[in-house]
Image (cartoon, rainbow, N blue to C red; front, side, top):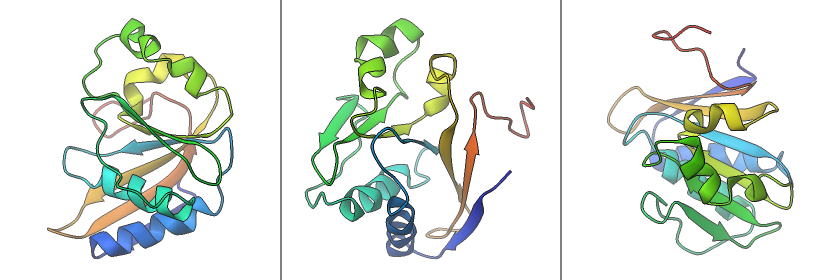
Length: 151
């Protein structure tokens, strides 16, 4: 069930929405960023990071797997897209990042579904046009039900 749904009409709009969400986050929170390639997950992560006090560049951690950003509390931005097994995910220190010291932003969180034992805040970005997105925010357990794979 959605906690709320936002309509974004531009990347700046999405960053503003991310900033609003950031005001409700603290150490130990896990945010799963869900959406296809190019949906705006990394841009949304940048809006969250800026609102949490990090003002450097936020880039996709697709190849480095994890970026750490200092802010009001540490921010751990992960991209699990390239990882194919739970052992690979654990190999990046996944459990340590979830330990509660900082806020975890996880792109492609469904790849770690069996490793997460409590609900996470899911942010699903759905493209509705070239620059527009529908952003659903909900608390959920993984794996997430989808229209193709009901729970």
